[in-house]
Image (cartoon, rainbow, N blue to C red):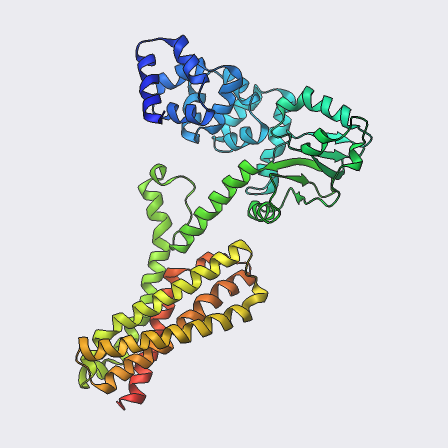
Length: 452
């Protein structure tokens, strides 16, 4: 059954006031679908429907809502009811929610929170933004040295329902130092009297609380993990980061990279929820920079104006300037896109600059030769140019393409090596630099080939 059909059925039950049937229908849905349905309701109905949900479902549904929805519901509740809802959430989900609220609202809610939960939330809120500590959860399954498989299984049955994941278990010593990890599968297949130390993997991968979330996501992707332990500076285990949070990080970081590659400052919210003024503020600085950098293009054309105005081939050269600049810019964009993607995936490092440069140089020469032949034909047959003018265009195209390929791969790698985001060296900036270089090449070739 598709979602529209489900929504129509739920709307009918809601309109007819059949709350018992509505509650039953909602509990049969996935929490994500319930959150999506609540998005379609107005403020009055959303709180009424949300209160119909069983307690064990409402916290999960609340975690899947967007920040605007959650704030609407919290504002309609009294402090005690709101805090009971936050108490039922996993700590990492509660922290994500509270981080988006005004400081005064957070202070009021924490005042009514359970003391232990309040201390945990305050600890999480103090971690640097976008760090491993800020996205981790403490609801993980821990075991201690000397535990048998039978005891471990009993502990999982007793407390596993309150843990975010039980697929990987963590063995700690008396000082809470992480000794190793044990997959649940190994416990299920082992005898009850087996010591968990004999089953654990001591070559585990972990991250520190202050590590950047993007680096954490790269580590999880590299080692194909479903969760990763987080330790403090003294190597004591603090929490774990699960794959659902890693997916959110990857989506967030990719969105930021896309926006930077389009010469924009990243937005904090989704497109439809971002105000017009914020969009303007995010776009204008780079647009101004790129527009001002276009002055150099105008200066070069003005400087060589006599070549375009007085020579017989000037009209053909003028007609081919857009072709030359666009082709060079497109080639530079292709090279930069592949290089930036390679850097993001860890396929390319700054140490690989020589290899990348050699490869793109060969690609540029082959592509440049083919495009030069095409440019020669365009200059002769489309614009009626002389052999000399067509040769000028062909040679300029060849060197402009090679230059664009080289810049497209070199600039992102250099940015990475000096700790800048390689996405800054994407299409708009590369295109602007290549435009200037292409014009200089064109007029230098024209001077030498046409003897003007």
